[in-house]
Image (tube, rainbow, N blue to C red; front, side, top):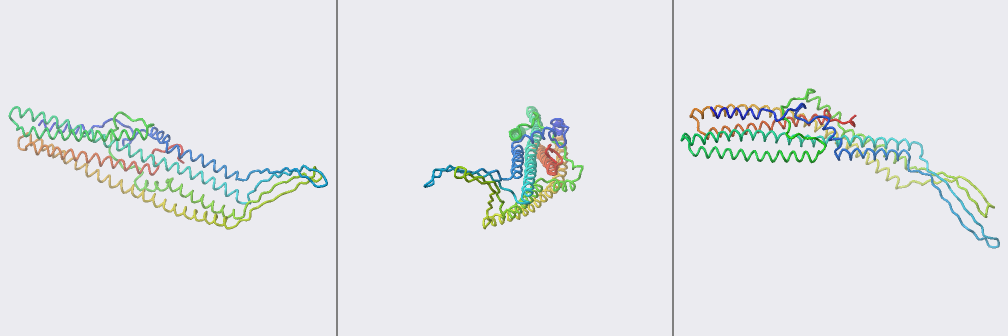
Amino acid sequence: MKMRLCLLAGAALMAWPVMANAEPYGLPPEAQVVAALDHHPNVEAARARIGAAGASAAMLKASTHEVMLSGSYMSRDVTGERRYNEFDATVSRGFRLPGKAALDRESGRLGVEVAQNRMEDVRHETALSLSDLWFDWLGSSALYHSDLANVALLDKALKAVERRAALRDAALLDVDQARAALDQARGAAAGTLAQRDQARALLSANFPDLPLPDEAPELGDPELPPEGVMRLYDLVIERSHEIRAADKEAQRLDTLAHRAKADRIADPQIGVRAFRERDGLERGAGLVLSMPLGGSYRKAQADMATADAGAARLDLMQARRAVEAMARSDMVNVTNRMAAWDRLRAAMTSATAAADRTARGYDLGVIDLTDLLLARRQMQEAVRSEIEARSAAIAAIVKVRIDSHSIWQGVDEE
């Protein structure tokens, strides 16, 4: 009877939460996650590239043409006359032909949008990394608490067997078997403790701005999102910044291809020239014009830009396929993980009931200790499998919510 009570106590310990947590799925508070993601080096570096893209857009708007000043001075000695001081000066500037400035502004604007979407995609990937590390910590912590409950139960069992052996009601072999089971359980607990501490260390090192409690939050039970899996599948595709970045990049390179074709006719350079010769006896001013005559180089440059634009359109097609594959994978993963957890939860319930019946049989003397320890080990294995399946199911749900941009969104999200 005491053994049965110990089994029930162990199951109760595993059922109690490690700590209360108001956030769904055992997640950290939303505001803390958003702040940690916003201050992650990868995200900040991507945000800095938006500033670089903005500066590039300003450069394109202004163009590379600048006012040029050139001049010369010479002292000329004319035979039979005298020495003359002469000079000339030219002020000129290049001008973009009609249509080129608009293309430059458009490519600059698209470059900023590409950088913005790439920053959001980097933030999305960083959020997935945080989620993986978080559930590594929560899952290993839940396993550790389960192993501790198992150790406590086997420790009580060993003491009970030792008392019975002292009263010559149990063999020394039973004591050895109970002690071996306890040592094995302690070894398993030490292993899960190492996994838990390693997971926490990795999480803390990669996201130092995210405050971590002393104990991991309760893992909780997985629940299907209220929006429905199919709706989240659509949102993964609709809100994908990877697709948006590829789309804007394709538009930008297409604009640059049109710009390269327009640049086969080079921009003219127009200026004013003034000169003074023979110490002022000859003076003059006029307009100057220079214009490169485009040849094979400019044609090859336009061909290269056109090829880059074509490749970008294919990259966009691949990005769409990759995101659609990810969305479909998320949907299948959530469904299958939930089914696996449901089956393993039922298996845990059956294994616990079997261990309880075995304990009653042991108390009545109709079942020996070997069968009891076997039933207890099978129950513990079922408990661990349920925890692992529950953690995987919750992680799959959180992933599809991150991929659909339903949680952990920052101020930069449109």
